[in-house]
Length: 363
Figure 1 (cartoon, rainbow, N blue to C red):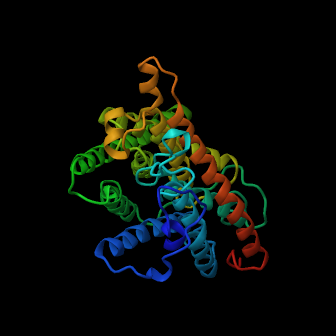
Figure 2 (cartoon, rainbow, N blue to C red):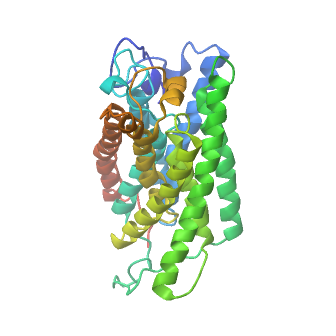
Figure 3 (cartoon, one colour):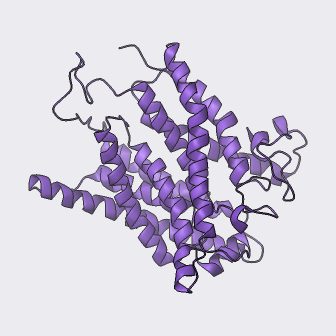
């Protein structure tokens, strides 16, 4: 997969998929090897997003099959298009799309949207857990049944482990800590990541409390909303952690909490069963994170992270009396590209797995 993602990429050409460096051939330097290891962690993340959604009803064989397809082919093509220097949407080519290319610093789109849309397709094809929307005889339940978590303590612990690990993904995406301006970018990433996660957590929990109070008359604080809100803020800031100001990270986190609640309710309405609400967190907020860059990318910080190209967040352009929306257009095209590519490959793939009896466990 790494060869498909980066093999043979140079800034003076454009392509669709990498074609060299298979099996780490000619990878001898420490920089090359650690680059592979770093990207391996990103690819694994995309696959694990799907695992949470289809938990409790997916066969282990299916997990192996879709993980192989996703990390070995589908995800690498997206990486090549956005992160390699030869991608048609990359910001690192000599002739980037829209004059700036898509800015996805640490993977709101490349990693989280990819895993999230794959999870959405898988959940739709696989169907819900027995007892979620229908009883054992297939009769529609008056209200969807919620399965309580087996351990809230482990849920909280897992969330904080993920939050801690995000400091490796976001500040780590500078791919170094020395060099002119690099420490400044890494420090900004750490700050914006923290602010967005905290504000997303508070936003989701208190908004859910207010909605519950309005419908039931009781005041309840849901720890699941708090934890998934934090993860939503983390996903939402991942694309723009290096280019937005701290106040914008706060706004992005607040909106991420609302985005999570909206997508979670939408899935229930559509009767799509997501065991851990990974689709709202990763797909819904992956989209928001990419769009937020097109709105909030601050000029100086964008130059520090991506270089000078003259196209920044639409709010800044609008504030300066300009209608320049090149960066926003690149972000929207990136979102549409990821949704289209993953759907074209993974929908038939999951349908085939389901048709041959490899997808869902026996009732």
